[in-house]
Length: 149
Length: 149
DNA sequence: GGTTGATAGTTACAAAAGTAACCATTATCT
DNA sequence: AGATAATGGTTACTTTTGTAACTATCAACC
Image 1 (cartoon, chains in turn green, brown, purple, yellow):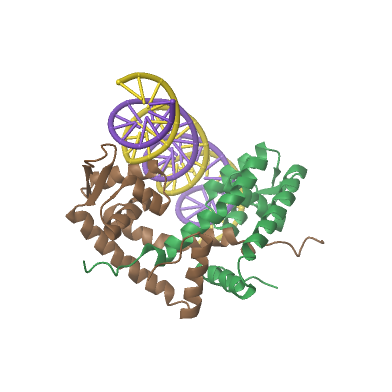
Image 2: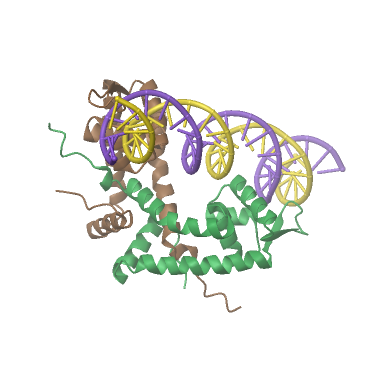
């Protein structure tokens, strides 16, 4: 009826990105949820601490683009699981330095290994050119600086 | 310290997908929110009705992989905006056929034009090879069948 | 040195999403 | 036909997120 050559949601990048994100997130979020009862933000905070060492809440927020209330809640949850401890910063008593405790470190190690393995599984669906182009495109869309090294 | 060559979140596809999805969704969600006070699910339901004609709630749910409670709430919201009407199906009185009303059709037309234009803007950041590879990769990740025609 | 403004983080309240139970209707199976 | 199960959709309850206001500390400026 004149309208059949129309724009399809499947060509709309934000829609495709959301579908792909949901689809690929589901598998891994089941992992950290079932193994450690974590929420996504909690996993991300845990990851940043494990990967980059002690940080303050606002530093994590800046790196991961997470709002400070979400971080605050995630930190409380991780604290009550004994995954991290807070230490008041001596030079600025507003800040608190977050450090992983042994059980938090263990969860980080375990989950990071799971993430790497899942990532390899995803990568295996693509040629290495396709894969690196995909990552580069997503970085560009996410406005991330390209990775170092 | 032996751990510095470690897995980075920026190489983790689900994370990148989420960042890119959030980043690109934000611009367009502001459009449908500001112009028509719609939520994301409401926009998606509106889109499906505008694009594919009259459908029932469960048909939309199947096409768009949206849970039926979300659809139910979105349909109520669209109904109270006079964007659609429900008609009981004669052969199965459980179902109701959803049809866009003129103001819903107008919103669909307007928003679809905006989506296309935003999509072109996004596409312009890539070569046409990169763009089609990106869409194809995302379709594969989202487990969508490749588009027809 | 006291006021003003920014920053780190928490808390309170409102909006949204997820889960499960729930009607009503239709399909199945004996 | 009558019991049982499946389907379409809504509602109630809970969890999670978003937004804004708030406390406490520090920085800047007169």
